[in-house]
Length: 133
Image (cartoon, rainbow, N blue to C red):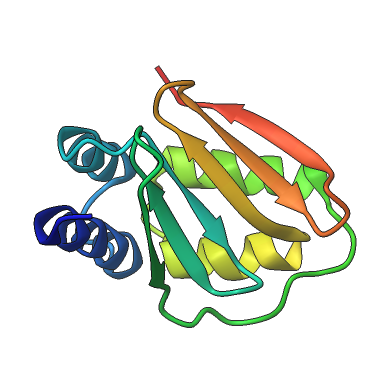
């Protein structure tokens, strides 16, 4: 993968964690750079960005508080997604990460092509959230 795309992926990862860009802005930057999606893995503390040709770059994420709970609380995950989508003044991605891990989310896969996010637990339970319109 070329250095410009890696730099874009890193800039988007940093922007999510420091709150300097919104989720729609981050998606726009990644799509413009040619990415088709990414995956967050809370157990490995990594984020992998994917290109359509199969190339990918895996980057370490800043540390977030807590560990992934054993049980996948779908209602809790849905409530956290609504909180994130509302972009309320008390929202931060760091808090979202800590809370969603406590709700048993081991990670999530974002598909720009499918306009959806698949959240998954340690037992492979899933919840699919469509991008807001």
